[in-house]
Length: 309
Image (cartoon, rainbow, N blue to C red; front, side, top):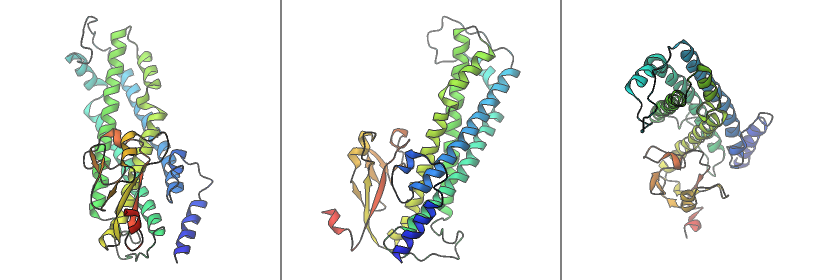
């Protein structure tokens, strides 16, 4: 039966070999890497479309807006925007309705992509463990019986918080680019649009970073959610943090390599608590989460005791 599980997992991955995949993910060489690499690539394209659409919205509003207020050239603190400039931006460029619509666009995308990734990884996880797992076909999600109301609530909360953060960063950058253009002079709509076109905030690179971070966060969330079944059955000794063992690993993650914890005990990574790689629910900073490629391994009772010595 275990051999059959492996065959099923390999068949699932090989059936998708013609689809483009993100090597950042596939090179992690985990049982789920092929599938999640494809998801990350598709998510990147979807996220890039949203960034382009939102840049276009800003450009259209710039064209319709009256000329911005004149800014004194002798100001020393350029980070403190004048009140009249803030009022102009809020009324004509980034009003509450625009920011809300931008946030909803991201939130809807994240809800869809995160749930889909969690379902994919959880299923693959079940197919690649050294024990037999009885599915609960009567559950809300059938064979995805690890998905419960708590996890769905987490998905919605994470999608909303991440969306607000992304739009906030975009808005701050748009405000700064417009302000800098006015300060440098002479101001022109074309000049602002060219800057928006080039800047990281609406770029391919930002779409890629968001996709990798969010899809891999969903990956470990799905893995952890399905692993809870094994922990609750008393099958586990615990878990071990694993870095990606190359020269790109950040120092705090190298230090956490092979750190052992009981399953429901958080890892300590650079002084921050994380239940699993890319977990930010306990306050881990972006520096510990963004584009992290670490994984964790389970240690099984009656099988892995020697690894604790």
